[in-house]
Length: 307
Ligand SMILES: Cc1ncc(COP(=O)(O)O)c(C=O)c1O
Image 1 (cartoon, helix red, strand yellow):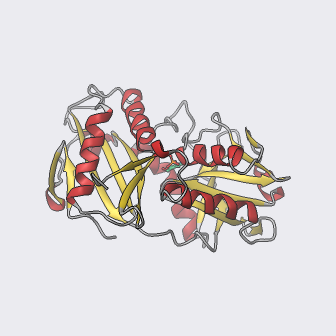
Image 2: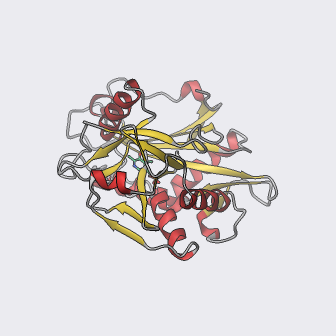
Image 3: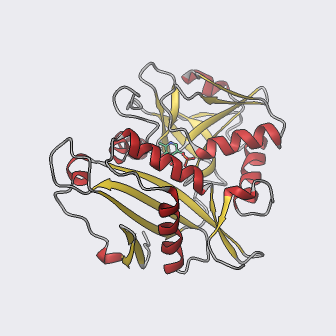
């Protein structure tokens, strides 16, 4: 995987190889990190790089730090400034994926709450491999973490042991990815993305009580579906077998963007091809994030000044 030349460590821009933390820090010992994965999109016409929905990502990062009882919660202007300096230091003028991690740096024991560290990196990244073909997923035997065990709403690094187990198992079994069920057997989400069904022309997605990450892309898709495409959107509990009654299904997330699901457990979703509603949503999403559509200007933070 290609990496960046420079990272941001605790507010300083440092060469990639120097972005180091102590091997006995609490983030290593206990997985005490919260993170965000964001995308930035290059608009050639505007000669501008736009970070998509930056303020929502920063708020979720700050929420995670609060839930995890960090002794210091970085303010949004500081986080934004560190991120902008990281992108500029790396001269990013193409589509990229950003990772910001706020972590407990202290080497004390389990209840340690600080010092709090911050690391930011960026990777140049083009379109995902499955955007056109769609993915063949399995319903995992690994249950999605429950809200009274580990907080699914928080992008806690420790949570991802669960996602990793599901994703790795699915891939080793010959699938492209996994969907996870909640502890009560209802559809929750993918391993790095939320899930939508299209049924009777309406969009259906597991609700906030289905142990999902409250995905920013899910919100973007729901807003566009309602206001631009005139679709009814239902947020509710979803049964596993309802997936197979759907005409279409897709995954969505900042990293994965909008990816059709073409089969579940080797049973075709609809006719086994990416469907028209998914394509409509996908197409609109890419035009929106890249600034081809002028709606929601506040969702696109320009990186390069004076352009
Ligand atoms: C577990 C999980 N669910 C959902 C998502 C999608 O969230 P968002 O759209 O905010 O990136 C992600 C991606 O970050 C994720 O890791």
